[in-house]
Image (cartoon, rainbow, N blue to C red):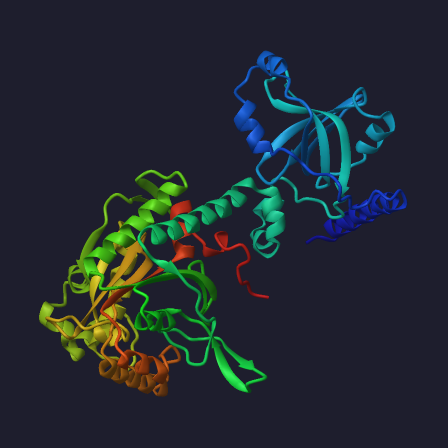
Length: 496
């Protein structure tokens, strides 16, 4: 920021503070007795189609509106301003013929960003713009700091993310994204409830990090004098509810992973997780498809959307195995090589994929998939048959115990959902937890701990079930065509 700009802002702040002090003296600062009866968008929807003459005949009078001044054209005896309320913008006509002369004189000193209230009658100007003719006007809140310049301020990405309130007050497009986000979440919730799921809440602080392969945030509970971990996933608690007798549960939850920042990752994020006892693998894929298609329709999208430059057809979801996708993109490998550790290591080296000696063939196969295939899955694709080695909570396939009954959904080259038939064999689960403990001892910070109570829960008997996690932030990114996760999170985490 230049010295001249800093000096200019300081001067504006000083001048506006003088105006505020006069308001305090007159006992007119921070008014709290004006209550709007209308909103801008509703007025446009109800009366915007009427002609100038029809609007005069309709006599729509005595309306009360409140909002922030975002545009001001001051003239001698009459002025036009545009105010922005929670729904949108509307023009206000202010004339000293309709309000007190001294009040009009004071009004001319009001600033962009000030929040005002006004009452009056609706009409249309010669240019057919819907306008409120003010018969009274009041300054409700004095804005001490100026709104950003119409173009320069909104182009400042740092300001948009760090001071989201400025972004929202200045940028209707940004505000619309978060309105759509709310509608997407509402649609997701409605889909789950209509399918018979019960919404529940589970703890956000865990004694053992689990439910996903990720590095947790660590905190300390003083009264208990114990270490706790912020939730990386609600999975193990939700599946405890299946043991307890609930058959279909879901949670739209906040989870935390101590990962780096990127356009796809924020350490605090939102997920949908749902679990259904006695559900089929194929049926759950269909439910996930329906959930996404319904959310898209809820914000007015058609079957075809654009995301980050890619044209995506949401009317068609395909299913392919991880192995067939890897073989299609890595022609140097044969099917017999996919379980051969040395062959996979050699191929990983040839494509400049670094790996650890502790990785088995399943982990190597997944890493090769992520490097060579994932980014190319543009159209909605359910990828199935993941190695058990990288699926510590998934049920083994009955016909091939080396793979898990698991799927991941990719759209636009990005993972949107992860689901699998749940492992309900307590002995198998205990062994996999032990493998995770060993992996952690070998230096894997993302490996899970051994959750003794969860194994005990499985020993009471959990029905066969399918569970799915859907990344809400990425879903919103996709459906609103945003390339950065920071554009769909109101207050994203940023570097200092």
